Amino acid sequence: MMTPLLSISGLSAISLRERGAPILRDVSLSLARGEVRGLVGESGAGKSTIAKALLGILPGTVKVTAGEIRFEGRDLLTMPQKDFRAIMGSDIALIPQDPQTALNPGRRIEAQLTDGLRLRRGMDAKNARERALSLLAEVHIRDPERVLKAYPHELSGGMRQRIMIASAFSLEPKLVVADEPTTALDVTVQKQILRLIRGMQEAHGTAVIFVTHDLGVVAKICDTVTLLYGGKVIEAGPTAAVLSHPRHAYTRALIAAGPRYDRPDAGLEPVPQAVFDQLQAELAMPFSSEMNHG
Amino acid sequence: MAERRAETSSPLSGDRVHQSLWSTLRRDPKVLFAGGFLLLLVLLAIFAPFIAPKDPLEQDLMLGTLPPAGGSGYEPGYFLGTDDLGRDVLSRLIYGTRIALLVAFIAAGLAALFGTVLGLLAGWYGGLVDIVISRLVEIWMAFPPVLLSILLVAVFGSGVHSVIAAIVIIDWTRFCRVIRAETMGQARLDYVIAARTMGYPKLRILIREILPNVLPVLVALLSLEMGIAVIVEAILSFVGLSVSSDTPTWGGMIAQGRQIIYQGWWVLTFPLMALFATVLAFNQLGDGLRRALDPVLKR
Image (cartoon, rainbow over all chains, first blue to last red):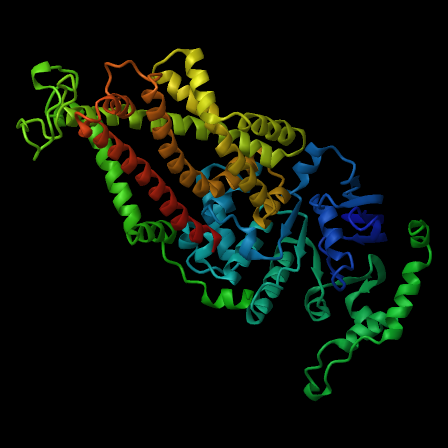
């Protein structure tokens, strides 16, 4: 078997703000080339922290205390800054959460979309422009010539997210991190964007880490899923297996908590208190106990 | 919120930014008036030799302290009267725009350049760079500006170069502080984080991503600073530390007019009005630009 594209092992992090409260507890996961992995959890579960650690954009208030993030065998956390920057954008790219703010408001789309191509791939302005046009066509933007000339605020949220996707895939990265890419969008646009990401991923053979709190999204586009709670991996495995035969009570409760479109009158089922009690007990158990000393 | 935004955000429409900036400015009478006035001043300064009715230095003691048009003893051709040496006030006023605007543009421009570079570095790199630059600014600002400028000109010797140097040395801190804060604000925004995940070098992100977004603030600040520079130049001329007295300046005219205020009020009043109107125009333009540029980029 080939070595995984990405393997995170024993990753732990604490918050420097809340007196060393653990944010990630011994998280491990691995990702094969071309695999789409859902990273699921509620707010504060640590899913975004994993993504940020991977991208090197952890805020100063979070500190990684243990573990490694190996990308093609090399640890991203300890490699020299120069090597890390060479990988970012080129081999690992981000589709950010909010396309409203992720594009520079003061620059035209053309400049923003061709930056990487010219800077990282050494293309001249004309070739970069050609490539940008074909990328825009690939993410189903009509009239790409005009979009290139536009400023971000002239475009709709869905358009901007398409541009972010085009930008993320522009350098043919091996891994794309999608950080809740549909939460800031209109519901009708969400579905198109999901389909688009999956389509791009399949066409380019890119691995994707898909951060979301929505199991419905996971069911639609993820091959495998890792479910987190309180910074700890609760359950992981192939999406179909996890969703149809959840092993952990929390997973079962979450699936039950989702809306049932076949029974609209059923209402939503809150996660029972007993499940949270169980989760708290588990978090307090093996190694987190030593961290909470003092 | 986000959904509403997506619905209501406008379709494509070419160069909307520039159009909306221009149309906002066009509908702002204060900006139009201030801009028009300043444009007129620039033209006066450039074409002073063709516009001024007399030689501003030509003395004629027989024609000393003539009143402006309408006063008794008004001499045709001396529209705003003459000073005690018989020099034409209007012509001196027109030539005075040259020094005023020269100092305004060059001093404010250089102060903006130094202040912006240091402010960008402090706001973006943080840490030791920020500490050094910020403490320097604080120490600098502890000195009273007018006193410091008089001291500086006394050290450099008088002349327009010294006036410009004094303004730059004193007022770069204004730009530095504001640009530093603005840079720190921008650095937290998603588009900068997105650029970081693209692996671009830090300096490049600063110049290509952040700088365009602090420009609106810079433009507004620059206009205000030009007004300040005009005042500082007038103060230094007033105390005789600016250019030599054979170059007409508004500050010099005010100083001279002050001595003969009982014989000829006009020698003092007209340069004062010119000074007042110019500074007001720079301030109004700065305010208007800030109002016009803000909503476009904060949308």
